[in-house]
Length: 357
Image (cartoon, rainbow, N blue to C red):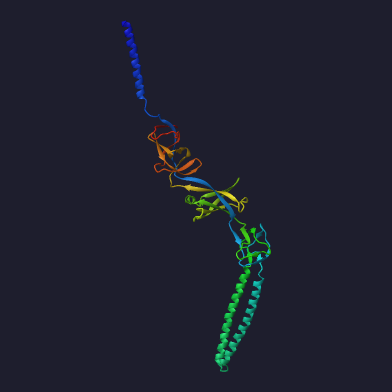
């Protein structure tokens, strides 16, 4: 009996000793989640070079819609679409027979006025001498002089009429203002043209340019010193931003850019649509982080920074993306800060982290 009691006491001591050890081990275990294994990257840039693609229209660097300055029927037109023309070449001739008839009439009147003026000048000279000697009344000499002056004024008016008629005749034809190619012909022989009605569309056969419309915010990051690129299918060529029209279109609220190929390109054709790749220098906005550092959640966009071995969340605003880099606006982040790029999907604020090499 005594032996049985001693055996039971021994077993109870063993059990109590085991429970005590388990409770001690449980107390030693840390509370809360275990340290998360992560990978980090240091912030080393505040500037992002972003490449944006925009649609552009190819056109000649010099083009014009040509129209006559007068109205009349077309008597001659010797050009077709695709014809090359030279500066000063007459492209369209309107009927100017009435103007030429008036010009001949004005020239005849001028000739008569010249003869009368010459005779009046001789009369003034001759009777002036006689009047000086007392052989002719001075009053009549003054009348002759006044008549000569009136003829001189009339001669000036006749010359002005002749010049005006010559200008009207010149307005009855359409002349090429530069060397180029006829892009479009709108008229045919015998057709009546009104003043200012387009007859010929002429394009320069020189350099082509691309007109690109971009949002206003692009102008803040765009520089004419940055290179550009023109793309059409598999064709690509280097280009440059030759001009920026800063004023915005009232309807689209966009700005106009003029992009010019660096070298002549035979696959560009006027009127077609191409892609313009523009380099935008984004700086003085925030910091650049790898795209893997961005965490999208219900609460918004976040980046986790490692501070004293713990995950510190920061709400950020994405400004621009290019390739695997993201420019973010985050006032608390600085150059050299370590941001989490792996294992950040399930991180919680303040959670201890273990940085993996």
